[in-house]
Length: 239
Image (cartoon, rainbow, N blue to C red; front, side, top):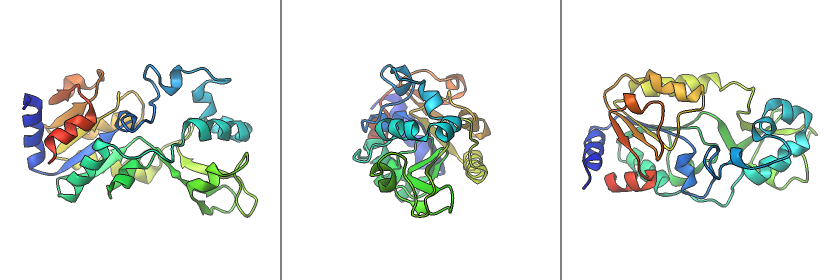
């Protein structure tokens, strides 16, 4: 067994771990990332993706927003992969305190994880902007054009768009979990998206593990860096 696998197993044996994940966790389920070679930001559209996923664009071009959002941001038939299932198993066994994710796909919950902190919201939660009524993802997928509530109000996905701030209570919880973690495993993220990436600075322990195929700005601060598939890594160390 590779040296990194032995070290990671040793780290996890004492419990108290927290997992912080990004888009790379879900790419192994077939969901494209944002900044990769074939990612969302390297494709051609009428408007830049960053603009189409902004609050201003949502307000001013709601139909165009939903045309893009339904095609490129919602993947209702995608299933969890090895990484999602192994993290759920680790939590059930008592070795993982929480999953903190930048993803909005809900795959951690589908795999069985319970304590999931969604920094950027979820496509599965949608709220009427007029009356506040909650709607499931079907209200967005099945709508012709702009989805609307029974009251007539526009339904907005409960996801954090550009120009919007992260939910205060969610960020407080994420920072607390990271600061109290004995082991912090960071996987599938380039740690280039702020403010979320900066949450890593709240970790003060000595077992920072980075699992990512490419370099990150935090590689020099990590106690263990693994450049392998996150699903294969977790499958090799979690029985």
